[in-house]
Image: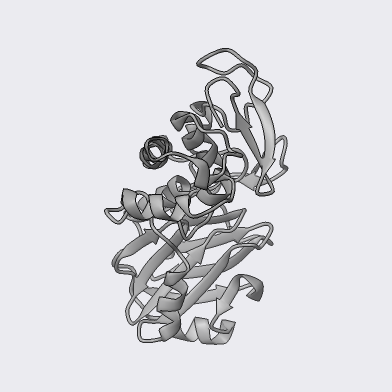
Amino acid sequence: MPELPEVESVRRSLLPYLPGRSVTEAEVHHPKVLVTPTPPEFISQIKGKRFETLGRRGKLLIFELPPYYLLIHLGMTGQVTFRDPGREDRPFERHPHTGLQRTLQHPVDQHTHIVLHFGDGCALLYRDIRKFGKWRLIHQDNPRLQSELAKVGTDPLTPDWKFEPFLKAVSKSDRPIKAILLDQQICAGVGNIYADEALFVSGIRPESRGSQLSRPRLKKLFQAVPEVLLKGLAAGGTSFSDYVDADGKKGSNQEQLLVYGRYGQACFRCQQTLLRTTVAQRTSSWCKTCQKP
């Protein structure tokens, strides 16, 4: 699933294309990915609307098309790409392990569920093989907008990321610290990859209970979270399966990961074999020497 660095990379890659463009036509090929409104209402409401700001909170893309906001969650396999008819379409590449597909630019196919057309022939395409991603078009005066945004907690790459609220939320929880980091109300945008990386950087085992961790150790973790997210963002995100940005480009952070997905291999620090544990129904990679309970 795309995490904060991957979603932010998508947002940034759309900045040269979307702001100032108006939607001339819209297509909804699969209603499952459109939560609200209905497909006919969506097509009617978004037609003629102009993209202004392109924002993000956690894993949620927030696009402003006054008087509406378009909220996009990529789910597990969602891809938002910009198609320019002046560029050459590319064939799909299939990942050798997951079987998922990606390409730099593609025409509409059976997995392309929403298309927004622009007057110059370009288009914004949403492709999602597993259809877990969700789109919502909500009027700025609709109370549901604030309700949807309230589901997303503090983004670690914003000034709202402060230690005392983080300390309070973690210290009162008896859950494993890995589960706490995956809680989107506490660390919006952090998923399995960056939770493992932050725990390694801060020297904490994924099964350690939040309420049992000292203030100094939680301070290290608090600082490690944005550190690993910024590292991933600098590399354009992590591409293990189908993640690409709006230009169809893969990220390279998978080449720099310290522990995630490396169980059974040697720790870069101490050379001990990295272990694997299931925490919060997620596979966690960690080092028994470098990470303490």
